[in-house]
Image (cartoon, rainbow, N blue to C red; front, side, top):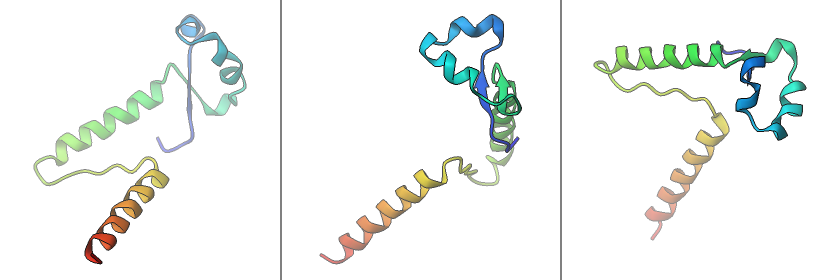
Length: 86
C-alpha cells in the first residue's frame, strides 16, 4: 500500500485522459503503474474504513504529504510566535 504508484489508464480507458498526458503516462515504469487506480482506490477505502472504526475513539490523521504538513505547522507556529510578541 505504501509503494510509489502512478495511476495509469487501462487501454480501454486511455481516452478518459487528455492526450497531452499520454507520453508521460507511457513513460511510467511498469512496476510503478497502478492500472485504473485499483491499488489507490483500495488504499483509500482502507483509510476510510480505519477512520470510521476510529471515529468513536478519537480523530485519525493520515499524513500523505509531509512537506505540506510541515509548512502548515511552521506557518501556524510563526503566526503564534508573532502574535505573542505584540
